Image (cartoon, rainbow, N blue to C red; front, side, top):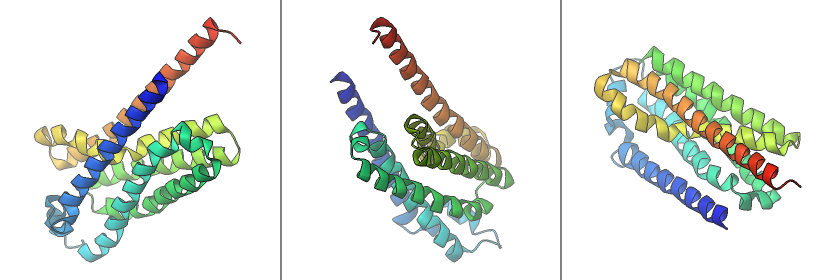
Length: 217
């Protein structure tokens, strides 16, 4: 019962953050038009930058990103896992939204704020996203449930970089210029998210082992 309440609280917290993040995206980029966003205004100074083309990649990028963020907590709950058909369908939607997003990232990264360093950082992020999600999907096909769950946790940790990146960037931007703060924020977000995920997993595994040693079957 205690674990159930804890899981509900954690899921509620995640969805609260996702909701606030969605509001941030709306007011930052959509409410007054994406061209009014400070970051986009800076891109307009680049003669190779086409706002109309960029929009075709950017809008799907944010919509698909929010979809994958929103599906994560639901897919990782025990309730979702009990309904196999629903779990599979939502899993296809989650993976599909990521794979489509992965196709958009290379173009968007070419005009990323901060220059070449940020471009490389986002491409690294893209590879990590593809790697973790692909492995998660393959383990599901192989019916290796525990490995599937582990890799999907890693995939969702990478998905969460959408949020973490913007939080980490705030203090870095105060002291560093964009060419340094942006790529550092990407790498730090990847490490923080994967680090927290692995720490929680190891902590849970140790707790299960300890419980088993006390109450052997």
